[in-house]
Image (cartoon, rainbow, N blue to C red; front, top):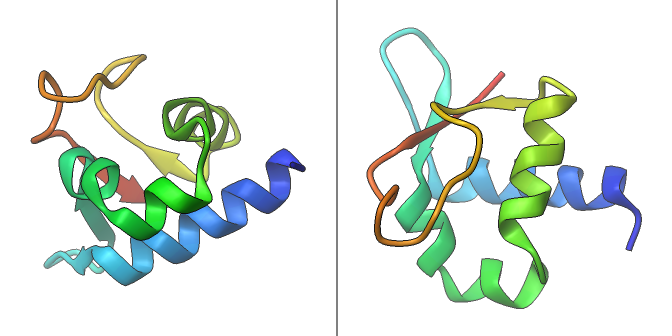
Amino acid sequence: MNISHEIGLLVQEIQRLGSKSADGQTKVKFGVLFNDDQCANIFEALVGTLRAAKKRKVINFQGELLLQGVHDDVDIVLL
């Protein structure tokens, strides 16, 4: 699958599952995104898609790599 297409799908899923913060940015917890059934069906490698989107400055999150369980409470912010 085309990475630009996957990043576009990721943006849609963050908008669907996330909420707007006081500063107007859409945020979602990694655990919410990772455990969502629809996301699981869309993304074969969610972590890889997140890293590619961060590299392209579409999203931002703390750290380099997010792991299930350990990083479930990390905010993924749509830029």
